[in-house]
Amino acid sequence: MRRTGLLLIFVVVAFTSKPARAAPMGFKDSWMVMGDFSSSYRELSLNYALSANDAFGIAVNESSLARATSKSKSVEATYVRKLRRWNFPNAQANIWFLGSLGGESSPLSGERKTSASAGLQADYETTRFYSMVALRTNVVAQHPSDIVTARIGFSFYEVEYEQPQPWIIIEARKMSIASADFEFTPMLRVVHRRYFIEIGASGSGDMRLNFMYNH
Amino acid sequence: MKHIAIAVFFVLLYFSNASHASIKVTVNGMVCSFCAQGIEKSISKLSATKAVLVDLKNKVVVIEPREGAQLKEQDVIREIRDAGYDVVRIETIPQTVAQFREEKKATR
Image (tube, rainbow over all chains, first blue to last red; front, side):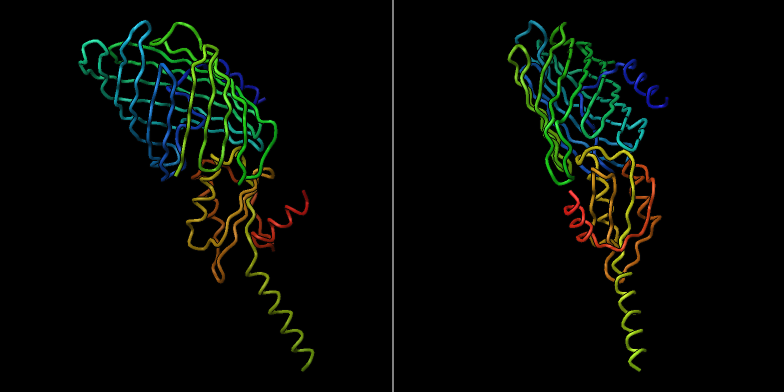
């Protein structure tokens, strides 16, 4: 009953974050490097987990406006908070808050202005099933935008702790700054103790590369 | 005299095995190695820890203490909870981490 209610909340609360991560922070006292690359959006970020529930960091990103030839760039301080974690015998669920504050440069004038964003991400996973929804909204920006992301994936088999595990992930993402449509991207994910890599291509042929490394 | 020597031998053997006893913890929430590595890292930092084994399939963590060192259950529980997981059960087992790993391979 409790798990059913949790899954219902997870489906209904469709928030997204920028960009969507399987786990947007590492364990306490660890550093995490993350990257997300596509033709319309590129981000490189680094954060440090001060506690089991809080991580601070920095992110630099570049995004292309729809029907524009130039790119918007930003440098932001980031904050991740694990709002809630549910641990089950064979599953895990989380709700995360992701925020950022920094400066964004206009692709037209090059002028820099303050930018800030807030987002929520919810995920549920087992050793062979993964699902996530996330929403991020720029609350202060030259070009207000939303990013909505949903992911679902599965692995063909379980592995031992020391072995890499391959996954098939399908992502649906809409970045209002780049397009009014959802972009669907199938990806191959490989998860190991230290690294996490995803590579795929959308229906329009746009390549995607995501990675995380935890130390 | 012979019987005393045999008795002393078995007493020494018992305490020798006891010093190799490990702690086996059943943990909720361990679903991927990338996430669970926090448990391995934090338990390994305990001064009394000699070896750690994370078993994702059976949802257990086995911790072997250093020779002569005492692993405190409350320290282990704290580190696992700080890593974001829940401890369901904690028990002492006679195997070392290496022995546990070999037994696990043998039962596959």
